[in-house]
Length: 216
Picture 1 (cartoon, rainbow, N blue to C red):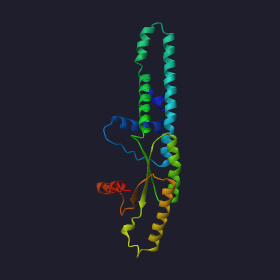
Picture 2 (picture 1 turned 120 degrees about the horizontal axis):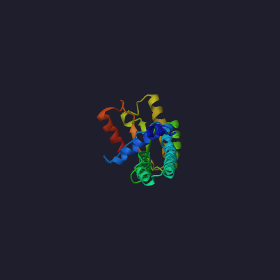
Picture 3 (picture 1 turned 30 degrees about the vertical axis):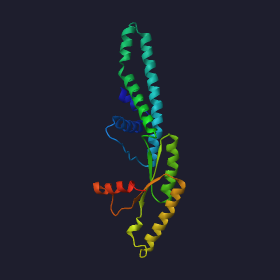
């Protein structure tokens, strides 16, 4: 019955994902956890619907308490019923879930332990997207960790005295947008990740990205 009731949650999918995130973090098996979230709209829905989940959970707890209270009032064996109510599996599960969510919320809003990093490209649309998204995340009181600029053309790989007009224009364009990024997000740029010659797959390429992220 509890599983069936849980599916009535209007944020069922998002709350399940949120639960998984919280469960992983609260286990404390690793020094750090990195969640590579889905595109902006989906991530915003995940964060926003977690509030709906909280409201739904509160309503379910109150409804269950009310039902159990009526059971006590209608029973002639109140002491036995009270003992059963204390062990009520559904209420116990709901209360445990609420407690876990509260722990997770405290962790997500702790600027000593959590940071939300935004990855953008040196292009107009991605910059506009994260500018709006930063405002959304701040509304949830989640600490902003900074901005990472991805797919930057590595000028050191080119002979700037002898490159095609196409590459020269792209470098100039990226420099323009990087300046815009610095103006829009002063002090928030944490790293530049170059546009690599191959897709980032495998340990070797991941190590190269890690090295780029450690620089500024």
